[in-house]
Image 1 (cartoon, helix red, strand yellow):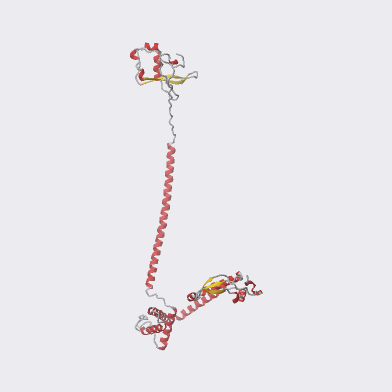
Image 2 (cartoon, rainbow, N blue to C red):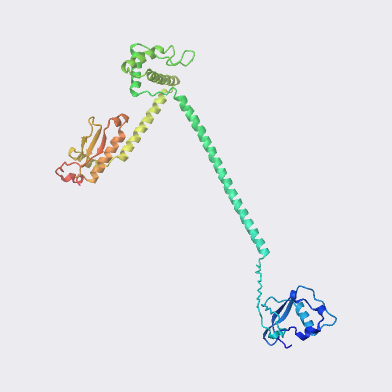
Length: 382
């Protein structure tokens, strides 16, 4: 056979092989492995895959050796192989026509060259990072718990102080009764009348040094006389309010007598006078600081005329609500001065004055015509 041709069994060569040594072709399959020849042509060498065991005869022909070597040769799966079925006429294999071509493809597994050492280093870094994060979170949590504990302790202390203060207030509220100013003045007048007209006195303590109260037996007559006197002037006043006023004034008399006995009356009067003078000086300084300069005060006093004042209309029968009609021809400077004077007047009112003051609401502008303008009051007009 020539180089590069496919080897096959001829009919004459088959006759030389004993019948007992012939391989059953029904269980055998022949494959040709395509290989590149020395001349560069793509030709395959024939391979035979047989599932049955081949036995060597006593004398082996060269063709048989070639077939056996082809069977024992390693199968190269890198190139597709072509399978030819033997010819029906038993002719030469190089003239047989291939019936089917089977291309066997082999898949090469992809190997991921991952470094075990590199992964080990990465896991160590991740573990270290997670440990640091856990330590940081633990530190923050401990600090938060500490701060919350301190705040809770402060709240507990505050609650204890509030409970003590509330308890003291509840204890003091048992005798804390508001005494109006006119009842206090009536008690003082009744005491003065009873001591001068009836020669009654209060005894603050006995000869043995025992402290007495306004309701004690020694002081009961004067206390009842004061109560009757005040009740006659203000019959609707409750007796408890009158007795509270009597008790307060009795304690004042007792403190005054005690200071006289201890020789502290003069020093007390001096201290009281000193504080009174300091308060007066502070008030004078505050007035001077808030007071307008003399030039502005003179200018403003000249503008204090009834023609420049806004009118007010009653909005109710009892005049508890008034409607103010602003003047449109007044300047902003003059209106600013008027607003400041009104604010100061409201601050100086006591509780009774604020109750008596009528409520004012700004209404529509007044239709009063503008009076004749004078040169010295030109700043009043817009």
